Amino acid sequence: MMHISKAQLKDESRIRRLNIVNSIPGVKPVNLIGSISEEGQLNLAVFSSVIHLGSNPALIGFILRPSGEVRRHTHENIMSTGEYTINALPSVFARQGHYTSAKFDAEVSEFDAVGLTPEFLDGCKAPFLKESRMKYSLRFCEEMPIQRNGTAMVIGEVMDIYVDDAAVSENGFIDLSVLDCAGISGLNSYYRLEKIADFPYARPGEFAKE
Image 1 (tube, rainbow, N blue to C red):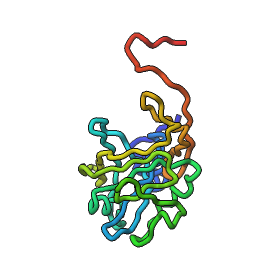
Image 2: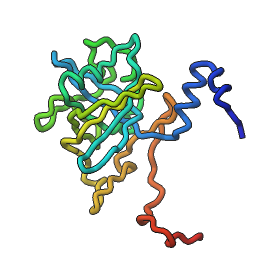
Image 3: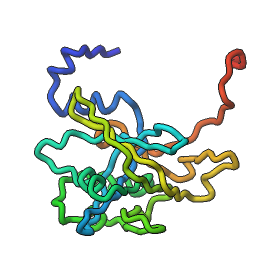
C-alpha cells in the first residue's frame, strides 16, 4: 500500500496534490447550483461539496473556495439576492455539467454556454436546471468562514423540493439510482450511482455475521 506523508503531499506538484486530496473522500454527488444576479444574469456552477446539515429546519451547506483573483459569481449572486437552487446532475449530462466549471465572464450564462435549460418554478427568483430530476430552492441563512484555508461554508434553508415521483418511497427515501444521479471523484472523474442494498436502522446486538 502506498504511504503519502504530510511532508510528501506538500512536495507533490499542484495538480497531483489536488487530485490526491480531492479523491480520498470518495465518490460525491454532483450538483449544479443555479443563481441569478440583480441585473438578471443567469449563472450555473458545478459543486461536489453539498452536504446535509439538519432536517428541522431543513439546512443544506456547500463549501465555497477562496475567491482570490477569480470572481465567484455564484457567491456574489447568493449574497445579492438571497436565493439559489441546487440541482442533482443526471449522469447523461455529466459533460455539460462539468464544463460549467470553466471561468466564463459574468455576462455569459453557463446554461447557454453548455446547452442546458433554465426553468423558473413557483416564484423562485433563481433558475432551476430543467434537466435535473431532483432539485430544490434555498434561502441564504449564513456563511461560516474556514480560516485555515480561506474557504467558507454557505448555509441555506430548503424552501421547495421537486423530485420525480418514481424515486420516492413511502417513508420518504429518495433512490438516487432511479434518478440516474452522477457522482464525482477528484476533479474530473464522473460516476453513475448504483444502489446496492437497504439495511434497517442499526441497533447494538442486532448485527449477525453471515
